[in-house]
Length: 334
Image (cartoon, rainbow, N blue to C red; front, side):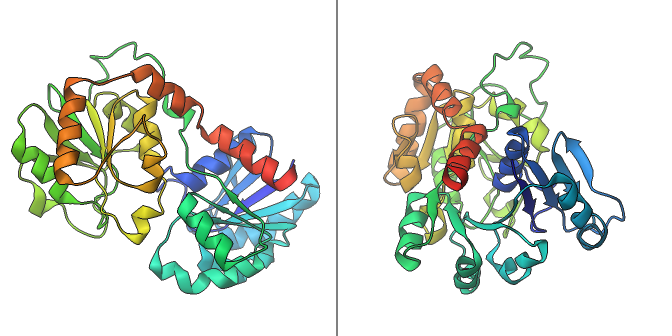
C-alpha cells in the first residue's frame, strides 16, 4: 500500500471529477490519501471516509502533520499531480514517486508541461490522442493511458425504486433531451438550437454551471437549469430520454474522454455526441454525428427507439473508477 498526496489544485467540494474520483477509489483500494484543498481553514486534516483525508490548510498540514503521518504509516509516497504549473513544488513532499496525470489539452498549460514531464517518474493520460502526443514528445517516459470512468456511488445503474418521488421539480414533464456539464466555450450551442427549432417532441435542458460565457443569449427553445449539487445529478440523469455531448471539435475536445458519457450510459440512456475520437471508440454504445443535421437525426431516432439500455449499463459497469485504480496499480506496481 502507498500514501498518495494530491497537491492543492481543485477543492474537494468544487466538482466531483477525475482527481476526486481517483483519490476516493485509491483509498477504497487500501491506500492512504491526502487530498489538499486550496482553502485556508485552520483545522487538521479530516478523514471523510476510511483512508481518505481532506487537507483544509495545506501549509499548516505540511508544517505540522505531514511528517508525523508519513513516519507513522511507513509506506511509499506518491504525489499525483494533474496541474503542470505545480511541478517545481512537488519535491516538498519528499515523494518516492511523482505521477503526472495529463487530463486535458489546455493551451495555457503547455508552457509548463516539459518541466512537469521531466520531474515525473511516470505519466498517465486520459485519451489516445494525448497518449500519442506524449509518447512522441517524451520518448522513453513511463506512460499509460487510463481513461475516465463511472462512479458507482451515483447508483445510476441500479433500479429506481421510487421514480415519482425522485423526479426533480424543475424538470419538464414528458420526453427530455439533456446536456449535463459546464456551459463552456467548447459547447456548440448551435447544435442544441438546431434540434430545438426542428422538433417539438421533447424539451431540451442544460444542467451545469456557466463557465467562461453566459447562457442567456441561447435561451430560445432550451431550458437552462443551472448547476446542481453532485449528489442530485443522478435524479436528473435517470429521467433524460437522450443524453447529449454537443462539443465543438477543437484541440481540447479532440483530446477529451468525456466523463458524462459513462454517466449517461450507466443510466442506460442513449447518448448522441459530435464526432469526438474517444466517443467513436465507445460505439455502438454512443452514437456519433458527422454534422448538425446528423446530430439532429440521431437525437430524434433515439427519442423514438432508445435501443439496448442494459448493454449500455454493462459497458459502464466495465469502466468504473475502481477499474481505473486497478489499471494504475498494475502500471505503477505490477
